[in-house]
Picture 1: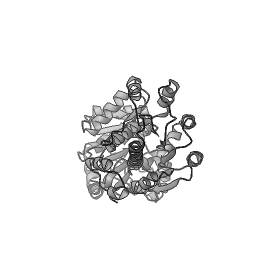
Picture 2: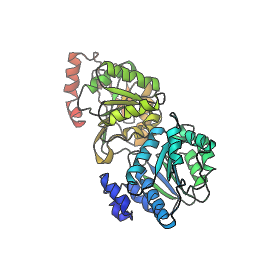
Picture 3: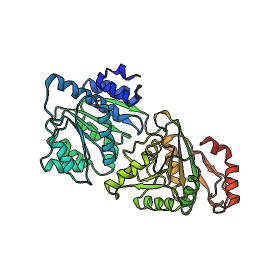
Picture 4: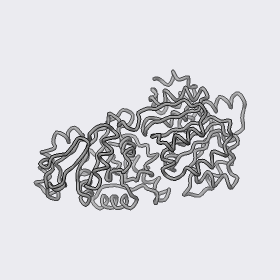
Length: 422
């Protein structure tokens, strides 16, 4: 649906047009009218579905219209809570882009950096505040922030917020908000603990579920490599020799693993950087900026750090480690294949991760194709099991460690499937 048909005001329509947006996504189409009508809102939508605009656009419009009528002061009128600094910054950029012609001010606050620039922005007046819970509570205690004028409250990535152990902080913030407010909760999944929180803070909400987490985007081609743990780095380097892997997001289960993978890639002459919670804010911003600007080809990330990464045209997502939570797999691969473009998601699976693969295939209700021939296939005595059944031993042949013959065999045996993934 065209944005013009959603009763969006001209200043925001002009800004959306500047960003190249004309048609709305399903979550935007269903949420914008409901929020503009003043309803509390519960949205279940996975990453890459356009949910930031789904709440940013109507909030900007409602505040803009109220200021024209009532000439309100520059008290904070909207609060958006995000679990990570990267996501908070991404949301802030979206509010800035969509609100370009509204003259509404927004600022982003998060920990890990000096608070001075953030408190200076707050002192100058802010209409919309995007924050991570810890820094928000800190600045509230220091009396820099007063939430008594909040009219719109958004809890974004609610499931990740609770997974990170931020539930207590979120509840401390909510009790400081005015009872007379409009509340919106967005989450990729709706487990019971999220449902309980939603029931406690929403009043007769409009509920929308778009692209449920059990489904994966049709434009994403998926495949899995069975490989011994010790050969994963060699396989990764082998794949990245292919220049069609233009912009690659690699997922590691641990921070230490992300650093190790990055170091091995750099030693192999592949430009890569890591992004995770132990990195300084400046280092994380630099790595993300370099990835966006194509200065590096590979970004190695942990799941928490990856929240908020919104980079266009990521050609490949590679699960170096399979996640132990199947829903996380869907979030990860959703980083590619955005906005209708094609994407490729590849996963490495060692013997200890076979159950994870079965859980993933169960939740997405499909079998992930196996690339059985490659230079680092597992020993023929191993058996790969997925929901599709057993991959027969004869299809899992022992190879040398990437020698000439094995490489030729890899490309010969997999010519068709490789072509499909380019």
